[in-house]
Amino acid sequence: RWVTPVIYFRRTATRDTELRGQKIKDGDKVVMYYSSANRDEDVFVHPERFDIARTPNDHLAFGAGQHFCLGSSLARLEIRMMFEELLKRFPNIELAGAPRRLRSNFINGFKEIPVRFAP
Image (cartoon, rainbow, N blue to C red; front, side):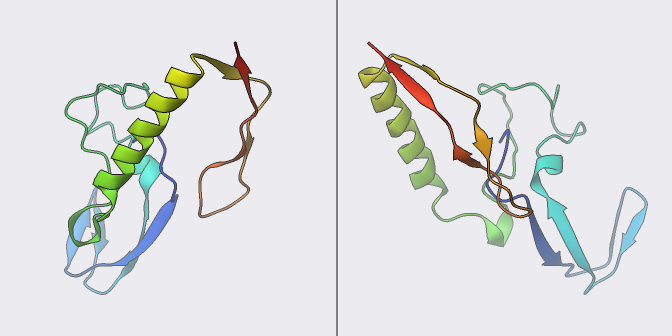
């Protein structure tokens, strides 16, 4: 939940509501910034702290409700297996330079992460 691959999504309000004093009417277009939601101090204790064991961990990395990612279980399995194998084969992997981020207003991620596989 620390960072999400998608920075924001647009949605259409399906009913009138109010969020922190801001009125949102049925049909209004809204933008949801996932990085902000995933660091909401009303939801997370110490929201800026990186904590992989955080509980509860009500993040929005895979969306929510009818927009919840159907592939979330597969994604979690794949990333866990990838790190288990990588660290088993290369226990001394280390950064070999500064990572380069993607230049995008919509997609969050890295273009390059140079690593060195030490014996």
